[in-house]
Length: 407
Image (cartoon, rainbow, N blue to C red; front, side, top):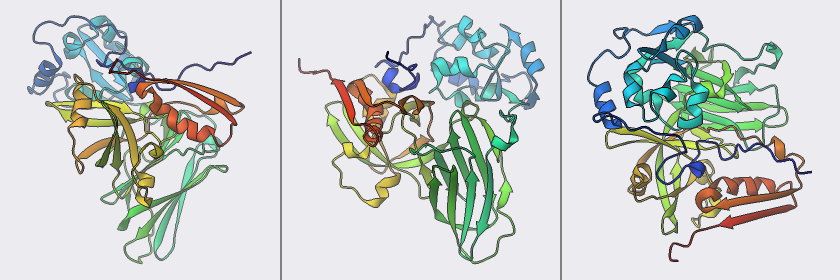
């Protein structure tokens, strides 16, 4: 009897499930004249008080959130941030009824079902009421299961060690950003996210080394000191330091990558190779994607793309490519974001997020025969999965369909 797991790969928001025009199956309503996206951007930047709080940010309790649940007074919560979406009602492409489904409650799950790639933080910036008072809640009652960290030093280096207290997938799970003396580490542990966020006690070199002991669940980040000073502490804790929360509670974190090359796959598909900053490392687990963000025609747009294996490019390999991202992008003539990417030149910068998505390799543990179906750029999430599967499976079949535009 076949055991068919619930489809979760690509993720519901991935480009592999989005039609060329950007629609994802959701219903849309006809908006009144003067209520387009650009009209909303102009309105939100007009200086009007859209929250009713005259610029104050407040801490919101569950009880307070529930009070604001009607058409003329509608608050909702997305990833721990509370927004007054009342002014946005007439601008919402899905209509008032869809927005009201999240009235007075945590709307994160509803939002992710349709809008996961939308940059709500930018779009609703002027509607921000404050933060839920439960954002720092830990989601496990058994403290012995919570990750922890420690550190040690030598004369020339500092080492941060995270003890995940569980096995770590061999595909990796760590994102590290070191910039201007601030260290941010996020470890994806299933559906949970553990974060270290510190302003370091002293100066370090720009490069970072990450070593992971997968079977024992240990992550070690090594930094090289600029001097031989003995540190008395690791640094000053910053926002969300030492927190362990559901991954969906974290907003995507972006770094500035540089476009190194564009390799043509066919007439409308390219592979973009993006080099990350020296202090940035992205271990993107198989089945997850990253977001690219850009300002296009005065609007901030975000789209998900699944990294592919670098073996798909014919470019010569060298050590620096180990930390580069390779993204396969289909260019749509009427696609605002893909057209923007197509116009980029080597050396241009791109905002790249850390890994997103909830694909689990657990259903593949006892699989001996793997069959994959892909069409067009739907191949992208398959490439790294195939590379991983060849290490443990003896029978892999890929059925690939492609449209011949000449016929």
